Image 1 (cartoon, one colour):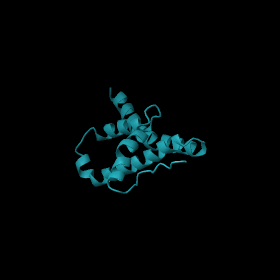
Image 2: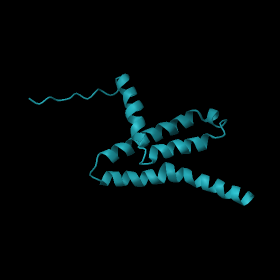
Image 3: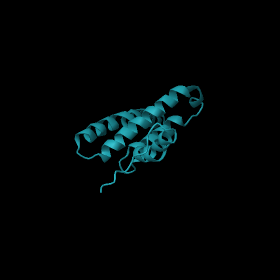
Length: 116
C-alpha cells in the first residue's frame, strides 16, 4: 500500500507542472503558428488567468496553506482552463475578466463601425 501511495504522490507532483506549464507552453507555440485567432485568444486568456492565480496564491499563501486540498482543487481548475474540450480560460476571460475591466473603465467597449 505504501508503494502505491508513493507512486500516486509522485504522479500528483508531476501532473501539476505538466498541466499548468508544459502543455500550455506547447499549445501556445502551436497557437502562435496557426492562422486561427480563436486559439490565440484561448491561450492568452489562460496566461492572464494563470498569472492572476499565481499572484493571488502569493498574496494569500498563509491562508492557502491551511486548506489541505488546495493543490488538488487548483490542479482541477487549471485542467478545466487548459483542456481544449472546455475552453475554460476563454470562457472565464469573456464572462468575468473582460466584463470587470469594462465595468471599471480599463477597457472601452468596441464600437461597431457602420458601413453605408
